[in-house]
Image (cartoon, rainbow, N blue to C red; front, side):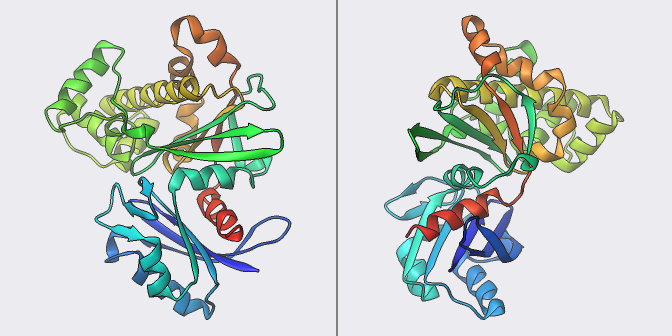
Length: 309
């Protein structure tokens, strides 16, 4: 059996045919720039026209809160409806899920080489597992376990209020408050967030890619400091989520930025901020932290949900 899966972010929209077997396998996929399409239905129809196939089951993971089968994409000017997609595409069974709900389902399909471990920790076998990931925005989700049964839960924790700890973070918060009505963690921990940090430090505007390149190369002191602040804010946010869901089974970093900044995340900046939770620091030191390196985790997760329809 083949199903249709989509992982729809604010920058990239990935659509794939997924073969359902003992393990899920992506047999054909396409990546498009999300904003180059007027909506999800025409983007998917173009993909299907090229494959010559039209599965009867589909699941699309979209960055945003899904309520009653509908989602207003957080970083796209799209309102997506499962019922409207089903009618437009001629696919009887269509489901929409949050993008980090898909990460949770997809993580169950990963193998060890898909991960880089930042902190081995001492995982509890049945402990909750948390996911957080910076990309165009900041996504979050978690898994709870009851014996052999896994339950994946979406979250919009990336939009919780940014919590500044240090003097330079408080200065960043003040800079962001002059620009945004609500300063969420996503305003600092995302691609745009990295650019915001650089601008707050230097007064000049550069793309996240430029800041990353200059910071990793050590060629721009402001970019080096911006990466430090980004990694610390990312670590603090991951630690907050770990405490919120008591993620004794582990914390996984997803999204497009972590693999690109893996060498930065390996230094002490991220983990120091992750653990720096006062009396609960020993608990955070026992929680495993991994980076998901596979770009296909969301597609696999959406495929797994589609298979169960």
